[in-house]
Length: 363
Image 1 (spheres, rainbow, N blue to C red):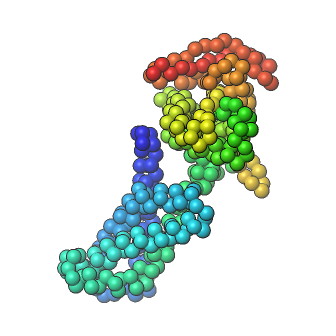
Image 2: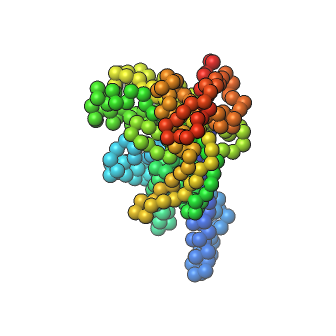
């Protein structure tokens, strides 16, 4: 796992940890003030001890959930039918809930008896803890929180990295003008491969291809705009200069990932996918459209031009092409990546010629 991939998972795990701890504190305070308001608190209630126990349980749950459990559950949802995956999720959650609940129960019992957690008398009280209403209530509440977390992650994945939060806050409810980079990537000789593999095997071929290049997109903060047959369209917001290199890094990372999986593709399909890519940069309008099915849509010349640039790859016999506008925003180029000017070229549907450039990796 490279550094960017590690950072992606670390950031996600840390976010889950923080959110879950905040939710745990909110639930604890709600329960406390509800009991306090209704004069239902026991006379010997230890607020500090109960709060520390709840916080420790939340920290352990957040760490286990963010680092291990959520990733495993997400994997099950990808691999199995929903009801099978849900059964595995509930079993895994129950095991973790009992483990974490046991820790919290032992801590509270140790406070009550003023004895160490490993004392026999403390352990003897543990079975009763799992029959108390507080454990059952928390079990159900946190099961709902875990499921909602998974739904949030899966829906976010459906929209693509970085898009779902914008959708939730209504960022594009009204159209906005943004400067963006668009990358169109298309598999070479797709028709020939499809004819040889047949419909079902070709579908799995495409699925594997898109799955294996996805880490390059998430690592470089790309937003997947569309899958169109054997083509994927990715976009990036243009920000400060260091971040503008991400689209180019994405392309070369995709090459590395497919090269790494070459033995698998050769064994499974008898061919290793190669692809052509076109880049363009410019202003575009972005906003939500649709009534029955809402989507965030980009419109403008930059999108059409990027598609035409990619289509020009076959004619020029090059795997990567970009506009001169794109070249300007990625300067200086990443180490050992060089550019080569190709002059002006006519693109289908364009009145004016466009200056094109290609890139080479000198590694």
